[in-house]
Amino acid sequence: MKKLFGTDGMRGEAGKFPLDAATFEIVGASLANHLREKLGRAPLIVVGRDTRESGPWLEQALARGANGAGADLQSGGVITTPGVAYLARSLSADAGVVISASHNPYQDNGLKIFAPGGKKLDEETERLIEKDIFAKTELLGAAGRAGSESTPVSTNTYETGPLQSRYLDYLANEIGRGLSLAGIKLVVDCANGAASALAPALLERLGATVIAINNAPDGRNINLNCGSLHTEQLQSEVLNQHADLGVAFDGDADRSLFVDAQGQLVNGDGSLWVLAKYFQARNELTHETVVATVMSNVGLELALKSRGLALVRTDVGDKYVLDELLRSGATLGGEQSGHIILPKLSLAGDGLITTLSLLRVIVEEEKSLQQLTEGFEVFPQILVNVKVTQKRPFAEFDSINKVVREIENELGGRGRLLLRYSGTESLARVMIEGKSQSQIEGFAGRLAAAIKQTLG
Image (cartoon, rainbow, N blue to C red):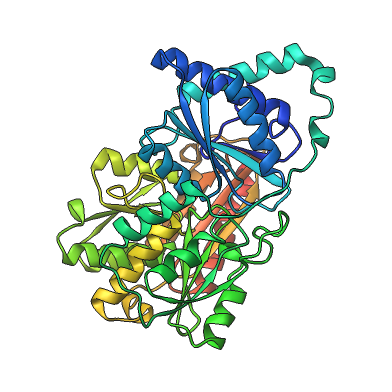
């Protein structure tokens, strides 16, 4: 059976399987039925979505299925992904469902399901839902599915309702407790997404002067040349407004990137560096360890090492970062993309929590973001894809291993080489970081040639 749920739920083009109304109705019914079997009662499900034009009718389809199977479904309307995770926990719901495709363009949408504690749904239940989807889809046949691609677009509304207000109160009163942002001028890029109303309201409530940009969603402009994937406008606006700081969210606001007063971008690695030092100084960095993925820059690893801190790496994906945080009991983890997880506060990466946490460091340390990121040097990086005809373990080929050893010796601990296969394509991926761009380009060319000669 083909897997529909990946490490970050389901995602695809809205209106086409599995992101169509018929499938979402099956998902709603299946989730409700499996929860009822497990609990022995009618389940409570909370749902939220981002600002895509497909969100309302997909939510309506999900609700038809869930309500038809006896679930009580509460809607948070337009709200961030971590906002749904918080609501699932605070409302003692049995599941939280997010309809969002995060940083993808508006034509796409997705579905992510949270367990009550805020952790993503277990794979066993995901497989059961997949089984129901394929069984019902086969039973319905093409005729039963006809028309789902042309489901009429419902009116999207972005007003702040009671559940969004509940989340805002939590952020302001719990995460932001005692934090005054008076005198701080911020530019906030909301990506025309789920944070468009929430982020400016939160930061103004704590006393900041806020210049909000890309905060007028129309259903089709989410992530469009804005937000965390396109920070050029934010960088320019921070300089034009003489702001102290800029922050960019993605479409569902589970990640955030920052811009200092000089217009320089600070990505997730930079945020981890700032927060790690802050927690270490307060003896709050458990095991003196930070968790990141294999994609985090070697400069972060060397900077942490200079303070006696260890960097533990996981596979790419916040799911794997969270798994390691829970396994080890570590305090802080995240991805270069700006997805930061503070498990004592939330098991879901939350761009708004990350923003408040970083602002707290700035206020308490009385330093600018530029000053706080000193000591972290970003090393040049190169990524090369090599087409291969087979994906046998690299360790089996002496010709490849010889070049790898030579490069690692020449890097001499001041760089990093990562060699892996693509999970979806017939490609070998070469990633090298080092002190010199020209040096790592030469290394990558040598290794790519060896792979091509052996496996191409």
